[in-house]
Length: 153
Image (tube, rainbow, N blue to C red; front, top):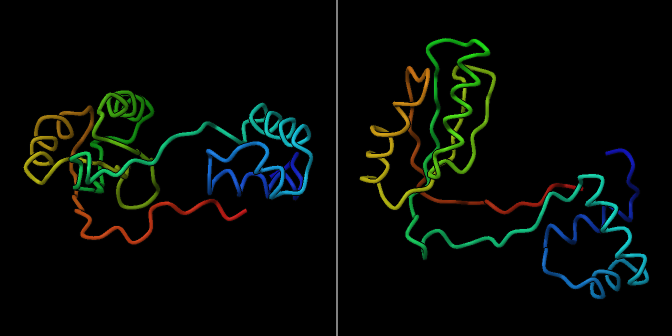
């Protein structure tokens, strides 16, 4: 990370742990005046280190208890196929994350659905119809051991 100092890193760590912390509380924890803290946080936003804030929701309480990772292998690995797949997968709300990876397959998807029957429908109706999909491998998560780790600043 360039353009930020150790104080900025401490600010970023605190904000990762509690994005709703007040400016006054953050300033107290870091040891800065509230005005200086506000200026630093604004600068970190402007520089792009802080991308936004969001609430972490409980997927089980909201009826999305099944977490599934899916390996996707495309039929061709050309820029056109990659672009078409990426554009289409962005439209699937069940897909929380999609990563192009190096190795034995092309993409790794993180999906959330209500149950295995809903995943089966998603697989047949959505995933297998995405442009270029040749093969998938499904990994249903039995237990989430760690899912909220902050970046190690």
